[in-house]
Length: 282
Image (tube, rainbow, N blue to C red):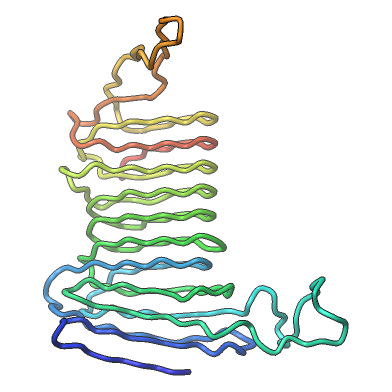
């Protein structure tokens, strides 16, 4: 393993780099600790990976701590030999998995950016951040995104996996294509709109009983449930365009819109194939 660190004081940028070995046969575990320029202020974390899980947990410390777990190349067996491949002649063994896995961290003015080099290996990240931290997280395959106990602005994106937000505060915009979305908010930012969407999955969120917000809800092939009292707006017809013959195309809006506790910033939830659950804290 190589570990490189350079602190460029002129640019006020700190770089940290791990190179994980390419020929590891089992899980590789490492920890990267990143200090903040101003640990008494809130920060911002940006992480994007191709394969694997991301879990971010708020804690009482003042550094960003990244626990890294990298597993085998999915085309490699535990003994290091290649799985069956049409291009592999009988008796040949895989000697390299195509290079090590490089992970870099960059910190500038309390903004921490984690980058992972292109690899077919799974990498799971468990990251601890100070409680007041905004997040921008994304993963594509073989993973879920979980956020615990964080207060800030959350931007979460997953392609093939679930998103879970536990005991968070602030605001969130989250979307996935194939996966459920679930979570609970301890408090919300009354001035920030939120949006949650999935193509194939359920959406299930809990908000404080006294929270004030507007809702915009839609499920094409699912049901919508709420234990909040919603002052629902009546459906409206919309003119969405004209034909070549000059005729108007009229569609009946099928979104459920309404106000909770008098209304406020909008919370949008949309699922193509799944149920929507809007819950209040018990």
